[in-house]
Each structure stands twice: as structure tokens, then as C-alpha cells.
Image (cartoon, rainbow, N blue to C red):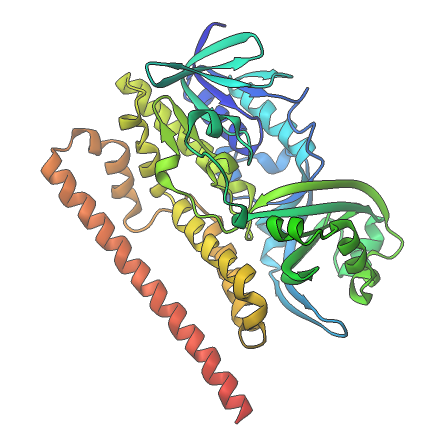
Length: 458
């Protein structure tokens, strides 16, 4: 196999989604994975919000390796002698599941196999060391001493992306936007989990705290239920953790000894342990997502919303990369001038809008969350809930979804430039009106909280 239409580097959720979407279109794609099988190097559990996966694989619930159906979401604040919990529970999720807990290892292996079943060529045990350039354009990858050529290379190889680095799209990450986390998976019998978390068989819940002190810095923790285990993670700013020589395993032990946490995990045994770099609150730069012959998706392109949603953002970016590649193949043009349509495809969903909203939420929580916590705790809980609910269905397109989609995917290529300017201006103005309304709604909500606080005091 000397040349294929597309090489996707990384068989995580973003890469597998891209390969799956390309294969369904009949486009030859090679999906490269450095592990012996996808998910082999990832022991992490995660919470999967499902609308994007359902759009790609409608019957996934019948076959995917899922753990518990999450029906309750809790925002927790833990003090030295008190705990406050804001709870959002919907029994509608019992019959119409919204998200599940799962383990990345089995899930990644299953998802990559779905791409193979659709026609993708999965190559495991290979590490991409460099990109091949020809007259300034990326034309392939180097795997050791071997070379593999393609019309387009998609970087879906995670936060420390070799594709992003070697293409020059992302020279370095902002250390202020990097967070270091550790996660433990703790064994508990299913009946004990059900009793302690007030659940029934198959039901799950999450608990999140975005302003828990890690050493002398703002950090956070998350906890959620699997079938026969509990996942517990803590995280904080990587630069501060390094400078302060904070030992995360000691912070984890301190958290687990808190009476509230101890009552939930008492008697649990350690199954797995993992450390991971997390990107939280880093807004994507659309100009660093494409170049001649290369696209970035998922964490490689900072398209990973970790403030409540997670993997589906990477999956959708992979799907939109596939749409862009199909357009480039139709035009037989793989230059940046054509691949920049990737941004338009992303913008035809709510992905970029949600990414920027997530970065603002993340920036507030980690820079001023503790300072403003006493007066804005309730507002933060509602904002997080709203971000999760409205941002989960990324495929929802607004405003005028049908005609905007027809124009972006078909009509744009055949529209004279002056008319294209008018249509683009109309689209931006309609989006601006929506943004102004949303901003006014947030301002009014904040003022309402201020008024209620003063009213209750006085």
C-alpha cells in the first residue's frame, strides 16, 4: 500500500470517527495506531454523551461496550466540615439514555473495529515519527524507515500530537492552559454502588467539583459510577503543580479521607491508576487546524471539550474532517485553500461555538472560581448544566439549519463571489443576533442572582 487517499494518525475517538466516516463514503483510508490494538495504552474510564455517536452509529447501544446509563449529574463543593451538592436528575434518561460511563480501552477497540467494518484499513503497532513534505505540502508520513503516502494526513494523535508539531500548525502548548490529572478506578460490588449512590442496576451518576483546592491552587475532581467500580480523578494547573512541587497522589489520598468521599468509597480496592495531561479552557484557533495536505482534529487541534462533554467533540471534528476531505477529493485539490473549508464544516455544527463557551467557563472556574464561589456557586451550577445540555448535541445547526447546510456543502462552490459575500454576511449577522440574545440572557440571570442575594440578606 504505497498511497491512499487519507492517512489518519491515531485510533482514538476522533481518529476512528474520521476513518469510519471516510470509509462509509468509499474513500480509501489508513488508520494508524501505535499500540498493538486501539485503546491498549489507555486505561482511563470516561463519560460518553451520545448524540454524536448515535448520529454516526445509530444502533451503538446494542453493541458498544458501555457501563452504566448516567441519569444523575451532581455539582459538588467540599469544605473542611461541610458539603453542598447541586443535583440534576432526569428519569427520562432511563428510557431515552443521554450518556454512559465506559472504559476507553474496550471502547476504542470497538470503535476502531467499526471503522474497519466500514472499510477502513487499521494498521497497529506503528509510530509516526515525521511527516513527508513535497514543495511545502504534506504528502505522507514516516513510520521508522518506511514511508506511506496520502493526499491528506489527519492528525488525531492526542494532546502531544506529532502531526501538529511536524506540520508547524501548533508549535507549542500554552502551559497556562494545561492541567495535570490522576485517576483511580476503585473496585466495588454493583449492589454496594447502587446502595451508596441511590441507583438501580444499570443506572449511574457523576459528581464533579471544579473548585477543589489541590495544594495551594484551584483544582477539581470528578467521580462517576461504572458497573462494578468507581472512577475518581483530581486535576490542577500543570505549571503550578510543577512549581509548587505538589504531589498529586498525596492530594488524592487527602480527598479520599474526607468523610464525604470516604463514605462513598469505603472498602474499595484499587484496580487501575493513570496520570494524564488535560487541555481545559484552551480556545481553538481555526487557522491552526489546516495546512496544505493536513488537518487536525480532536485534542491534536484543541477540539476537545473537557468542561463537561469530552470525547464527542473530537468525534464530531473527525466527522467534519471527513466531509472536508470528500470535498477536496471531488475538486482534486488538497491545498490549504480548499482544506480551510474544514472551518466552515465545523461552524455548520455548534462545535466551535461550544468550544469557545467551554474555554470561557474553564477560564472563569480556574482563575476566579474560588474567589467568586460564595456568591456565584448556584449560578456556576446552572451554567455548567446549561453548557452540557445545549452543547451535547453538536450536530444541531442554527439558525436556518437546512438551507445553511445546503449552501455550505453544495451551493458555496457554485455561487459568484459578490453573492457569496452577501450570504456570508447574512449568516454572520444572524449568528451575531443569536449571540447577543444569549449574552443578554446570561447578564439578566447573573443580575437576578445578585438581586436575590441582596434581597435574602436584607
